[in-house]
Length: 316
Image (cartoon, one colour):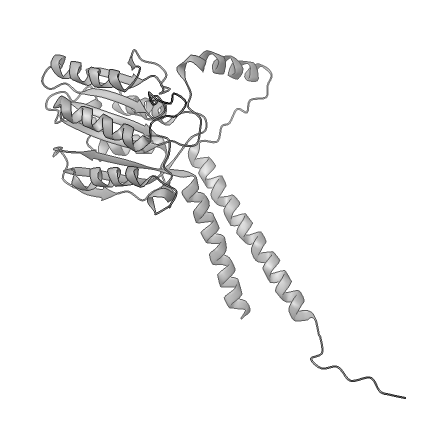
């Protein structure tokens, strides 16, 4: 009996650690209708990876090195590469969480299954230091070596991307106009990169209420298809931080410099993989503590020698 209790307690500890892992990671989906430069149609990478690893996988396995890197300009299979950074999904939502938006999940599922080429990355670790969009773009630049070789780079103003002379888009209407304009001006063989972040679109009726993410993604994909461009899309979620607006970058830099001058900043920063491992370790430690409490309680109960029957008091 004691061994069974031990096994059950260990399973509870591992389940707790798994739940922490799912809560600390986000999913990513890559799809490309009409993209035939790679052999495999559908694939899923179950490894826990950092945003940099995700960018490298998208470039190498997803074929985006032919689209974004400057040394490969000869035959580019698509006209537009779209990166959409959402704010809602966690890895546990893809596994069947009832709190997730079913419309968004169905949209991603249809895009994944109906495209000629698609890849899924269920477990991507996020960073508390940088935004997902900035990590992806900087990783694309680093992996390409000589920088991005695309004809035009545009991103929504709600995205926080540092460096580079990129074109900024204000809202959904400007995104549509940009896609139509670039389709008219783009020469054959060129590829554009557009980075969109949920949070930059608001309802016309209620300015305090943003559009649902599923509705925004649907409108963006509809605008891309109406423009007639051949495209490849990458969706990745980043729900763990509030949106960093570009207008506050100066204040953030000032606070960071002031912290460094006061000597309170640590020279070593724990990246997203380090934070994920620490969360897993915390879950294992919690499971071990609960197990020790359970075993100690059972031992105490078994050590109590309580008689099963009591003698009746004798009368004088």
